[in-house]
Length: 216
Image (tube, rainbow, N blue to C red; front, side, top):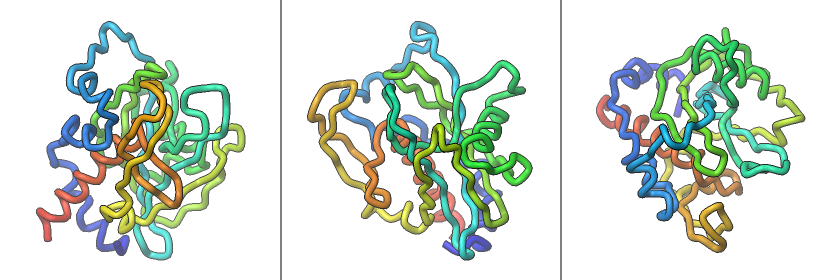
């Protein structure tokens, strides 16, 4: 989608009612659906993180940035994710966390990002994190400077590809729920994107599609 055309829809994204769990379930392993519907966060006492769903122009077309995490000894090793990370006590709020972590991980300064809105928080059982997603836009072409300690690669995903149903697939994976489990996923530039990132992407897709269709 042409970025200037996309900008015309941005104000209409703000009042859209978030589909929340209805979107998350579309890309959730079946073993996780019950917990999505009835999370008990008081018992889990989760750690807090925030991520940035950043849309920006590249060659005049709208793109979304994702990162490939480095391999490490942890549950999210080598996975596809949004720029983001753990809330720190020095952060004024979760939005500041998302902006700070985006700068640290991919080198985009906070003043280059206009935060549009907060999306539905996503609880991640294996790491016990409650992740707060934020939608942001940059109106200028960006150069990315990944932190080599955390980021193995950057994916610049055209919005037109993201909204195409052909990227939706299924994959057999070994997860925290068991081995050889069939899970819904996105095939994005030959990367299988599943789990929390896929569920957050699902809500973003639904909100964008609802906004575009309502304002044709």
